[in-house]
Image 1 (cartoon, rainbow, N blue to C red):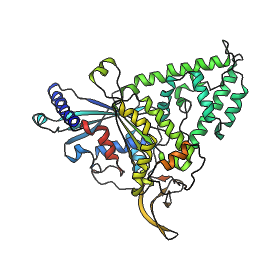
Image 2 (cartoon, rainbow, N blue to C red):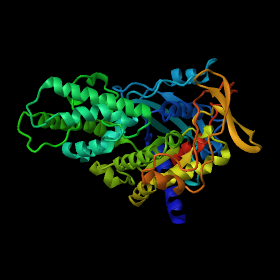
Image 3 (cartoon, rainbow, N blue to C red):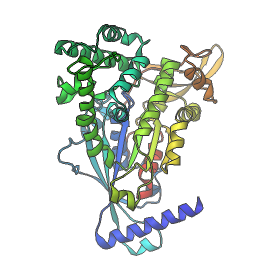
Image 4 (cartoon, one colour):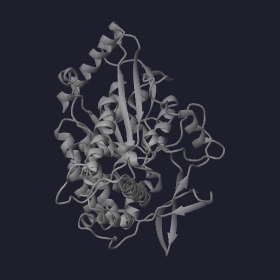
Length: 469
């Protein structure tokens, strides 16, 4: 580990010196994703605001060493992508009546440029250098679609129908799917009706907190709404699948979805990402129960498989086999817990992702897991309940704006107390309930040089970009 750190430091100094000589300005692409309501928009907005005004970023080493001369926004490099609406989102979060910004519904991009003074003996002879950080925001639902690339229509159908069979949100769709004979000749109204019922299930499942809501474009169709690539659904495999049958047409449209929707996204955007943060709403899953926790664990394992983790080297660059070299998993809404419980929250997420993280580490990627809040909207309090002191938090309720105190329950220090019943299919927690309130952003006054208040956002930034500043 010492040798690795030394060689990495020397490599940074050589890169900085070469940049000074050639004028080359390196670019680092950071992908930001997470499942629905995980806080992607809030994370990017608060991260950019706190990198522009860094008084709340003591864990960012380049800031602590006073090596950052300037940070500024530039036009995004891809003229075909929308710009991330940073200013609008920041105004929503920090205005007189603060509110959460609109959630991610399409891919967007923002470029943040750093001018830094390099450290080290070699670099002491060079002037300031520039690093461009391109932040790419995209819906987590699109990320989950990458797992479909390795599945045939029959495999996907069988897996989906088995997985959702007992969910109440799927009852209507399952009735229609089982009533259809896929061997019969295609009738377009039937195909459209099946797709509509399946889409209704996906929307209900997402609202209920299920994580595995794919295909993602069914939920965020954009200009593809009503097209054949979004007009299919899983069906039981019939004994025969003749040409022009309903099942064969569903198969054709599923394959078109992979080739015309998923693959272009992977090729044009996802495959170019250097580092990635995945935001995970662990607390909401705990509140919903063991089945939601197991669903989230399985979904996150599929997500990590899609990243093709590993180290980027000169050979992989030449061959076009670029891989994500760093992945940070962040449990969001840490401000809904007293800080005494943050280690338990981080431990639960590490345990939940243990298998996936081990595979990524073995492939050469650097991974980490933290608990954080991109925008802190609570304060900590100690309250008495039945004569017992409890560590709680106070915030402004999203529903009515009134102040409320929340004690969400005591998270176990041993994550297996949660993950074991979840894997065994338990329907309720045996000896605990985990409450969760929805808080609105707190009213705050920012002093000059300060970004919005947060919890461990500086540690996330250090992991993602600190070694390149």
